[in-house]
Structure formats: structure tokens, C-alpha cells
Image (cartoon, rainbow, N blue to C red; front, side, top):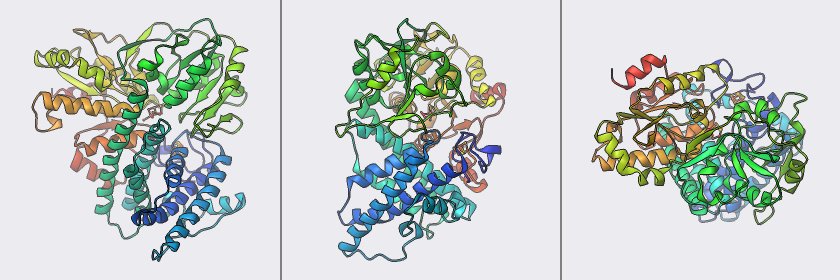
Length: 549
Ligand code: FSO
Ligand code: SF4
């Protein structure tokens, strides 16, 4: 195996024996083979699309397949055998569509022609040199191909969530397939791939906008909300991940059953949506970011439902092992996976029955956290915010969106938030917020000093807010605003958020706790020279630097 797609890549270069995430060698290889299969499908589907013969089944298959391979999403090898088998059938179907339409097919790459019918054949192929990341010998081309692929993975997650809510955009699907096919094309230069990287950011913005529209149309605009972090006396179900449709169905099905619902990690922003406020049994948020789950699932006492990524493999004998369920793109061997029926309906009754037999959660903290500052809510407060900037009550905003993770070096973000002067405001989204959302940082004239827009995809809101401020202050460039970007990353959704910000013209983003292992020296140089991307340093020095002191 060779994997360097997330921030925890071993030794800062790549996992080669076993993933720090818990993914083993053969699972990593199968994930590579699935991506390789998706590229093969895209080779034909882009040609079919060009002659007006697109197939929505391909769109779905591509985004689900990409999503399956996001860090911590799916550890179930059976899922990958199945996906590769289905993918090869779909690839050959699209090949036939091209042939029947008389499309000239020549110089077919191996991804478009290989066969693997049995699990053994798939495993053998998955270790072949041409399949993995290291198949691309030129380090810069490899770096850019992977940067694009990881961006597409993040984009895939967002369009999948939008799609279950009925919002789809062919233009985005076409781009995803075109970009995948281009990663097979040896004739593209480094410059071509840099351009494709920025185009990936463009479609990242579109994907996040699509999901924002889907979420807010279905559930209303997030609004200022106090979320309880203590517990009640009923047994509960803990829901994690990002899929709001799953949250909706779980809330509907648990109503009146005596079972409460709590959010974990990235599902916290579910509380900010008006549509979910009517559920009295939607009690609060339990715990912190994804990586604390080993302890927190134990003390939660009830069942857990994973709707997307962020699974940490349990320790052998973990008390909660028998009460975890997955759905959507997530999966783990031995944990029951709940499928949707043909109408998208999921039956959570088994989880609810199990919950009834469990004890209520053990309280691990008490109090409230505040959030719900997505674009509409911030626009509603615009006068107040603009006034505070004009009077100097707010000197600077710090966008600290992104991810949390288990590395000790992430303590930087807590210290950074604590040491920021009182006339600064943190804008956040994603699970990065857990590093400082329970600190008592106070407010500025009623505006909390930490404004949480929501999930990682709601970083889109932060961009919309920045663009609005640029307009209000009549500036020519988004970079003239008093906003500093100090972003934490972990997995591939953060990659698409980063590419989206670059596409929007945001400069001088600081990225930590470490720079991606998949950036070659030359690609990193391009990002530094053109966009001012930098890492992080020591808290005190960084704050001085950002405040221009
Ligand atoms: Fe995972 Fe966090 Fe939202 Fe990231 S919980 S790490 S960018 O924020 O994706 O899923
Ligand atoms: Fe390593 Fe991250 Fe890849 Fe897991 S996803 S194998 S931790 S680089």
C-alpha cells in the first residue's frame, strides 16, 4: 500500500504498512483499485457525454465510489469488492454505448480494459504497479493528479448529500468525470494540471453551493442556537457524520418512542436548522470531534449511527462495538449497514429497539454551546457586524474552519483561540471548532467571538460572508478585508474547501498542523508563489504576524 491522502500520513510522507487511520494494506489497495476503476468508467462516460449519451447511473456510481474512499469512511472490504465488480460492469456498458455510437476508441488505457472477476483477481490487480498512487513516476504530476483526485473525493461527498435531498447538477458530474479521465492522460503538462486543480476548486464552490441550497431548502436557514451539551434521563441514539436527511428520518422515527437523539462531531450543526427544532427529543450534542469517539461512545451507553466518514476502528472488546450502525457511504466490517429503499427511506427500527434496552448516556459535561452563523443569519446581523468593524470594536476576523484530529500539535488551535485579542472574531465551520468552541471567549457587543457556520461544507457560508463584506466595504479584492485564514485540515473534504477558497481568490491561507504529504516540493512552491499558502508556526509569533505587529 501507499497512501498519503490525509494529514496523518505516516512520518509526514505516506502510510506504507498500515494506515494510521486503521486501514490495512489490502483495504488500501482495494480502494486504489476502485479509484482506478472509476477512472476507467470516466474514460468512456466522458466520450459518451460528448455525443449526448450520458447515464445518471454513472454519475451516482462515481460520486458514491469516491466518497467510499475518503479517510475513515468505509473499512469494509466486501463493499469494495462489490463496488469494483459493479464498476467494471458499468465501465463495459459505457464502452458499448461508445462503440454502438461509432465513437473512435483508440489508445485505451489499462484502466479502461483490465478485467478482474473474482476477489482473488481483484486483490492481485490491486497490488499491480499501474494501479496505485506511485504508478505516476513524475513526482509533480503525481502530486497534482492526487491533489485533484482528493478534491474530487471531497466534492463527491457534498454532491452525494445534495443528491439525497433531490438536488443534482450535471455540470458538476461532467466535470468530476472529465477530471478523473484526465488523471489518466500522460499528455497533460504540469501547467495543464495546475489549471485543472483550480477548475476543481471552481466546481468545489458549485458543489458546496448546491448542498447549501439543498440543506436550506429542505430544512430552512441555520439560525442562532444554543445547543445543550449535557444529557437527559432517557436512553439515546448518537448520530454522527454529515447527512441531514438521515438525521431527519431518525428524528421522525424516534418521536414518541422514549428514545432521545444526540449529535456527535460534525452532526452538531443539525441543531441549527429550524426544521429540526420542533423535535423535543432532539436533546443536544454529546462529546467532541470524531477522534474522541473511543471514549465517548463508551460512555454514551446507547447505539451510534454513522452517516458518513469519521469512523475510528474500535479497540478489540470495546463495549460499544455491538451497538454501532452505518449507512450511506460509510461501513465497517461487523457493523450493521442500513440501506435506503428505492424511495430513499431508511428503516432505523432496529437501532431504536436496541436503544430502548440501553441506559441513558453518562453525563460528561454540562452547559451550552452556541452556533448557527451561516450566511443568512450573519446577513441578518450585518448592520451590527459592519458597525463593529467601522468603530474598531472588531479589528480582525480569523477563519479557523476545517478539521480536528488526534495529533498533539493541534493544541496549537486552542492556544491560538485563547490568545487572540478580545477585538477579534473567529469564523469557523467543520469539526475544527471543537478545539475552542467550549472556551469562554465572550462576545463583542452581543456578537459571540466564535461564530460557527456549521459543517465543513458550510465553509461555503464563510466565503459568501466574505464576499458580502467586500461588497459592503466597497473593496476591489477579497484580500483587502480584515480577514486572516488559519485553517486546519485532516481529510479530503478540507482539500476541496481549500481549492474552493483558492479559486475564489483568497490569498495567504495558513494551513496546519502540517502541510499535505502529497504536495511535491515544486507543487508546494507554486502554491506559495501564487497564493501565499504557508504552514503554521508558534502561536505567539503567528498572532503577531497576522495582526501585523
Ligand atoms: Fe470529518 Fe471534521 Fe467534515 Fe472534516 S468530522 S474531519 S473537513 O471536518 O469533514 O468530516
Ligand atoms: Fe494513512 Fe491517512 Fe491514508 Fe489512512 S487515509 S492510510 S492515515 S494517509
